Length: 320
Image (cartoon, rainbow, N blue to C red; front, side, top):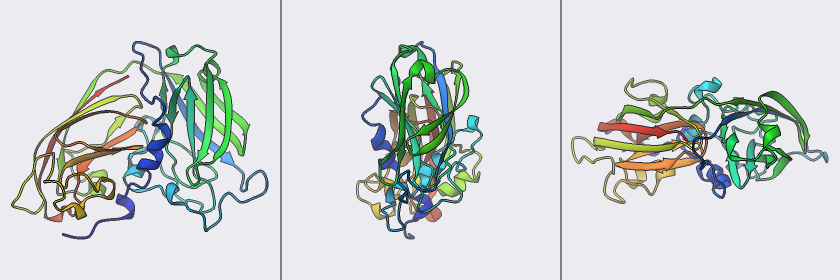
């Protein structure tokens, strides 16, 4: 077996991004209420901090802002015009912050993922907010944070009624953030959706992303969606034998060929990633999507060249 891939197939931000929202309620809890879609579309920052200091020096610890790999592939949403793997900053600026937005309303937390170090971020993720859940005068705190050092670049408090007023607008002078573009619109009800696909153990994630197998697809989700994944089939990671079901090989076996984000999960098992979350799926798993984005399913094996088989997968998505 070959050595593990790095770079494009690492998940450096899964824990960093997920930790921001874990204390809030990314999954709205009310049913049958009105919903609005918020898009924090972009922002503009000056080249230096308001006090004249640089955002970061070349020696800064930038590990938390290295956007790439599977988490980078998962960020985006097709209705926003972003295809799989296209949402990241194409020319990162090494001394710039890595901005992302957090919205806090009535004890609930919603957020976007950072897309790289840039002074002009353009985010692709929408946020679904249950407008009927909150009284119009409920305070809504908008924060722009920096994934490099966790600092607050700027924040503003408004009311949920003001924030959810439909249409585009630009908020200005938010701390060190010169402007923040926001667009809001009412959401239409969505039905329960079921998707069936085949996850071929012979294809890398890059190959799947690039359309190598028409039986596979990335699946768009909204924050708050309840997702149930069921899988059958077998994968032979060193063909022709032994072969394993979606739960994978016995613990510890061939673990050095796992993806970094799934180092402690079973080798050759079914796993998934979406913005802010790395999910060990196995035979069956139910979870709630914390952010809007793509669900990417694959086999936990970085040496797919000698694999055989794959998993038949059904994904059921229940909207909030």
